[in-house]
Image (cartoon, rainbow, N blue to C red; front, side, top):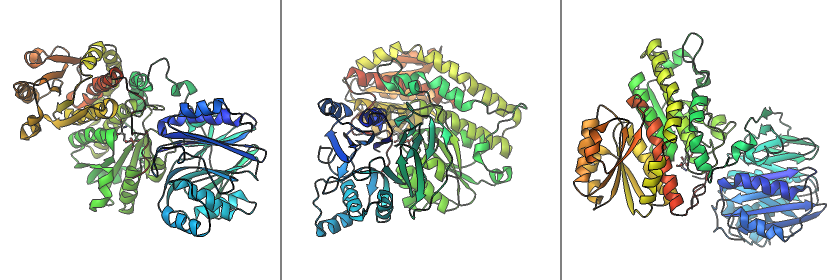
Length: 608
Ligand code: AGP
């Protein structure tokens, strides 16, 4: 949920840390702060609001030093104000801590600290850690951090500096992401690799309950008992430009443009020379795949909508029952899953706490868990039995676009692979469907090139109070996605429904001029969708119809038409999702809102 950076090297630490925080600001932007150690002088600056506010403070400060830690916050304990901004320090100002996560036993810890005379200056759980380190410190910061971690319950990434240990920062993680950057005469820790890929592309993931000692000359990782743990490094091939805006006003607009590549790269290399589909990442034997008796998909938000599309595809091609579950609800209803259940955990960030806890529950029930995620080395990928990576590249905008598009492609691949192994689709059928999928990137490119009418439509909707989205079959999940995008970006009340459901109540919402978006690409259910369009239009709705090029049957009932290219009806989400994205981004822009960082949201929701 928060962004964390740590640096030890030879450069100006404040410059390196702040630049890293800027790349991580999408993880939270309620406040920002840095602690810089120059010799034994530890200086802390922090400010509520976006990083720009801290920039203003730092412009008037000199913070020399080549060791630093920094933080951008998404508030969980205490309002986003200066006092609650990280870093937090101990009574003497000797220890500085930044933290991502939730320490679930912090009230108990704070009570004990109060009894022992520690003065509390914030509402946060993090400050307790600074005072605990103060108590445990006896000249060995790593040992003190290890001792403190054993007292903590919940989830955390901590990065700690002590003025008596110039040249050393100590980091630790439980349940949340932390990655090491290994440079030449300098080393880094960060919430993800974007914090330091401007300096090094050699990274190492930090595993559960590990403690990292970071010095200019090297890094040592131990467990909570101080036993050294070896680990693999990996090369980060994301281009630094990939995390920049590339000339677009918003990251989201750039990422919409990157969707053809996201699909192409996610589909890429999936066919063997014999024309068979392979999915080695699933890491299941053919026999086990044939033994699957149900599929359960767990996810949140837009990833949940991808899962709903996956349901239609897997059920159609594999004749397997598929249950799509809101991850936050899944484990609390004692679900029926077991050894013959394939659970698919879909998560762009790979760190969503609701999804992580749901997959942990599924694994306890001995289900096989496949992660479908965009983040290599993420907690969800490392705690699943198998991981299929969507290759959408870094997605910075909080509203997910290219990652969701890549998730859709991945779900089709999973469905076809299961069908191939289970024999419910023969090799020719699988190849034909893959061919249809491989045509999609060019169709997306062509569709993106004709979004001006959607931008114009968006400007006319900027003052709408309520918008409804309707769809049938795979159009229903896209109606949900269209509504979510408009809510999260333009803060407009929007709801998605199965089109057939509108007459069972929601139709009462329609007043004269209420915009209703109906996803009606050419489909076997077209006649029923036309009926639905007529139902809402008869009650005064402004009908905005998404239709297949050349399908004039919708014209008599549509006030506005958004045309999309033709493709197989099961694959239409890969196309209908694009105008939904552009529409919401452009309405938000027309309303003067921050398209990349909508209020109250964060890119990775790592608290339950
Ligand atoms: C997407 O536009 C939303 N910002 C949000 O619903 C997101 O899809 C959800 O939080 C799940 O995130 P994840 O894919 O990283 O798990």
